[in-house]
Image (cartoon, rainbow, N blue to C red; front, side):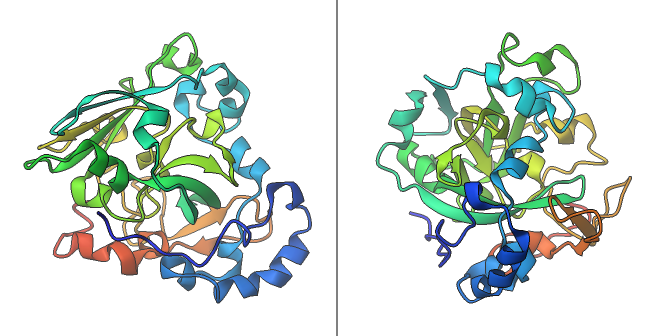
Length: 301
């Protein structure tokens, strides 16, 4: 069993999505959140700890299966059927099979996690997720000796996902983690936001969330999980390995070839709020840096 991640923040500490109106009042009370935080969240400033509103989180997305514009997923993802939902689990596991989602996660603890989210495009949010530690799911299916990586696939339904008509990537969308990354207690499979079921445009009904990595690693609408010996296919890495490394850890010292990663624009902060410094490993350095001890992070980017 993986070490449980602890966080003194609960959903009661997050601003309710329906009441996220008066930012001045929010900021006045935000300082109180600092003392209530744990791990990486404890090193954030007050503004970082204030979650984005429901509207911001659900209307500004990258989900190319529904279009390449930021508003396209919210406009087009309603066509995706999310119930019933199955996930195929295969590879180096004790209990392979095609699982109904409810069966796969039945009895596992759903936790509230308020995480920073950093896009490789240098914008960011703070999102109150609800989800299950991926380690709990992997333990349930049984990880076999020799498994070193976990591969994921997004569902591929051209009739429901209009973006699949365009060869933006080699569909279906695929991603992967090293096994120790997947088993880390910060890594979750999210099923909700603000205590509500996760919307289609954000990856319903279940998506990966790895908060110290750029957002494209957190694959949406997962339909397959495979335990492998070798490093798996990762869509953006294979499409353009010079710009998108397999690891894709948030690192302000390693720029994207076309823009700096030293700062970020906080969605919803306003036109005149300026940019804020990007934190190493998105602020989770104390929790995850040991995973990469001895690695050249400029080479394994």
